[in-house]
Length: 424
Image 1: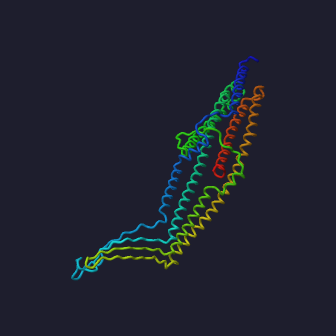
Image 2: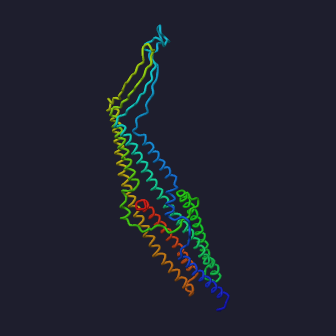
Image 3: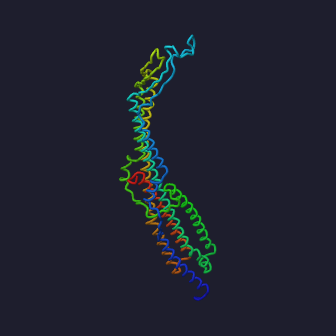
């Protein structure tokens, strides 16, 4: 009886299964080792130096500075010339000679806007430079956040795929042992189909992870310019201090951009008010006549009279003042939105971190202990193949879930740090 073919088959299946179980238990508890070429800080630095949106922002600053050079300058002078007093009827029609009033004129005209208008134009141009700088700072802020999140997504996409490949390889001996368990009468034939379904489910998951990896690599390539980036090194710290992060909300680039926009709006108000001041224009001319009458010189001036301010200047001043108030209100709304977003992000981070720690420190060790116990019970003949398959399947899923939750925490931590904290 002891040496019967059925007993030998059961012993051979149990020995093979125990070896596979101990081997896959080591794989299920170990982490993957990799060496890839792009660290988190390198990704941020490359994004800052390579992102086309940042180059566009720098060109915007150059354009604003160039425009500021010309702001407040006097308009270009105008050259005027013409013919005056040429007779077209009477005895002298069509003749230049002997006509006292016929003359050729040439002159220079110069517009002279009010000092208030020119000063306001310079203030508007200077404010435009500040606005361009604020936009560049906001773009840099957004690029760093996007690049950091893309790096974390790629890092964990690579880790997920590597871990899943290890799990598939480690569980394969257990799945292969199912037919032996049926032959040894340890499993019902229908139970041997369960591992097939599980393997198909994990293969489907692997296909999704490959798609996620390609998408994450494409996103990081968008920001770094690297055609095939890979993530190297550890993720940044994921333990955040809410007090240290929240203390810098008032320095966020979007709020500083509203300060520049407010200055621009006030400069527009000053420019509109300058319209109530008169603008002057001066002209010097020289007229050449027939030598018997002599040449002429003329000097003149003209002034713009803002006589209808109630219907012209005052509505423009009111419009620009309303714009200035609008910018102030928008800044307050943006500040409230950022504060609400920060509090929401921190709450979601705390929840994600708690669930990750629970998966890492409670669920995963518990399932690892369960797999050990089921392996020992199987060795003693007290458990069947179905039980040990279930235990190791649950352990594999728990490891993937723990990695998913860690990825969620890391992404939120990077996003919060780069958005609100010292990383911005």
